[in-house]
Image 1 (cartoon, rainbow, N blue to C red):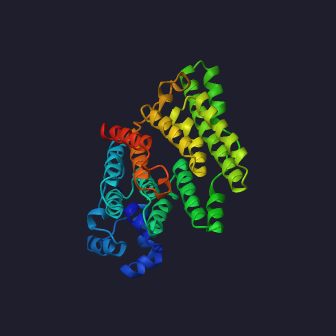
Image 2 (cartoon, rainbow, N blue to C red; image 1 turned 90 degrees about the horizontal axis):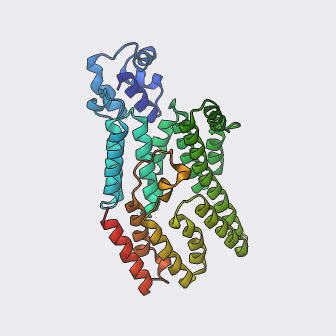
Image 3 (cartoon, rainbow, N blue to C red; image 1 turned 180 degrees about the vertical axis):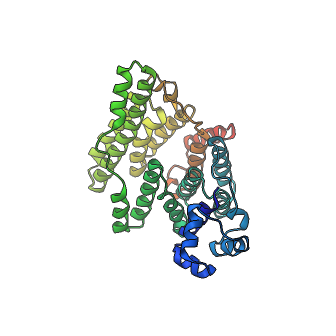
Length: 349
């Protein structure tokens, strides 16, 4: 990675101006500016003071490797997820930060790692999870300077959701206002163009991608409507919405797990033991083939990354063993049988 980029990245992370950095190093602000723009380099005697000021090692300061391959990033994420399932969250969190510090300019790595660190706070139901907010938000904010608009969009969305969860509504709105509103979905027109140009494979891929994303968008909307109905105690409406979610998942071939999940949420809320057990059995059947859409002709032109059934199985096992709100099901023979099946699935992966 270029030395200037390292200096700029960590100076901004420290929320330090070029003027302040120059003053503390005994140089002029234009000198710092030239370092960061790659127009000149600091004197060798300043490397150690710069590293100390930025809170990094000289090895990190002089790291010239800016990017990792997709495969290398995936290997790190696989290791990160595996450690999350076996070690204390705080220990793995620090390991993740160390990996990021080793490759401070690899935005794809930073965003991927912080998303995993963020998500596992909820998956593992970490006590006092909010104490990690500052470092997690700091990593997301580093992405906001990226030239990759998709990465910026992802980071802004994550920051919005964190602020919303903390009931910091003004801050949440500020992040939301920075997310560009897409007035035209160019993918629609590009797919049309590809079809006219007889580039059928490319057209198929875009239509399939929009269909897949469309399912996610529709599910999000239906879930939101259901949540509002429950909030207003309109349970009949919530149940009808759950049926629509089930039919949508069935029509678009998303699998039994996705078909049963909405109804399970309502049955769980009602503490309906029989319905919960039936739906848990259906969801467990769905775990055997968690992503049947991969084999569907609806999405036959899409490329997929490896999806781990083991991750979903891990989350279900943890909830079934530790979530006190499921106590009304514990001791039931069918519940224990389902738990045993899921453990077997996790062990096979």
